[in-house]
Length: 324
Ligand SMILES: Cc1cc2nc3c(=O)[nH]c(=O)nc-3n(C[C@H](O)[C@H](O)[C@H](O)COP(=O)(O)OP(=O)(O)OC[C@H]3O[C@@H](n4cnc5c(N)ncnc54)[C@H](O)[C@@H]3O)c2cc1C
Image (cartoon, rainbow, N blue to C red; front, side):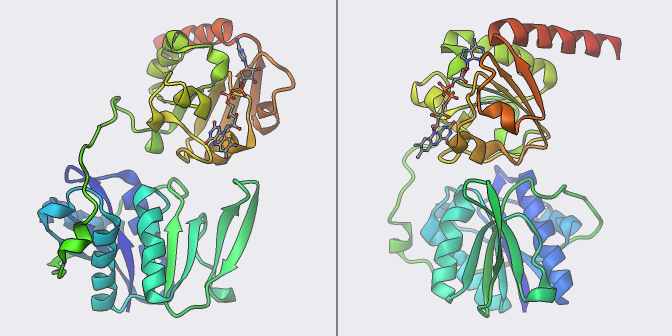
């Protein structure tokens, strides 16, 4: 019996959120008196796979097939089911991201397992298998007891700090008998996002809404983001109007982020927007309307015109950096 965790990598390197998932699985395994096994697919070398031992995995199962280079929910599910059978897994962890949200319910359905999606805590084993999750767009928590034999969880990224330890995982090949129909969905094109800071993993985020008036004003936010070393994000209407790319859209229908600092500029703070950002540790709101709902969710609020305030903030950050 083991705790299984699906890991994702980009061009052979693990993303922080996958290391967090491995650490999460390892911690659950420890509580249950068992071990954690990671499952990886595609082109990644054994030395890199073995580094998952530093985050608590004892073993890594690796499936290579050139058709797995792009994400495919059906094929990935098959890999996880094969791994679950091999390891007699009772707990299966994925991330609450595009891959995990697509694969985990399929695994749960196939294994007749209870599923908690978007967990923000370790399971409390003293009360059964109780996991805390966000509900109502992050307005409340639910505590869910999974009573099925096999349990599936998707972990909300950026819930726990990632701590690197010692150790090396053993790496084994996992052969999966794929059929052509597992690849009936084909990826025709992959468009890579630009920018060096990945939004989903950024510690600092500068975000703009319709109050920025148009894409021609975004340089004001980009200047601040550059000085801070922050990623940029936006509200949905901004992405819908093609002022910014869709991968920057955060909220109920966009990405969920939990940075240390979220600076919201010219964003009203609709509940659908807050759903994607209210896990941020500190929220700063800049808005010219004192009645903007976002002020209620803010740790710090600045009342005024974004086009005046943001350049002053950027200049202040520059001065601070020059003097420290
Ligand atoms: C099913 C559903 C899902 C949705 N999903 C999402 C989602 O995932 N993400 C999301 O963001 N929205 C989502 N929405 C839309 C959401 O309800 C809001 O309409 C949207 O968030 C508003 O975007 P905004 O705050 O940028 O624009 P607005 O609501 O137009 O607000 C603009 C703000 O800018 C301020 N402002 C104007 N000029 C200035 C200035 N010069 N300086 C400073 N402040 C200024 C205004 O006071 C105002 O508060 C969803 C809606 C639905 C129905």
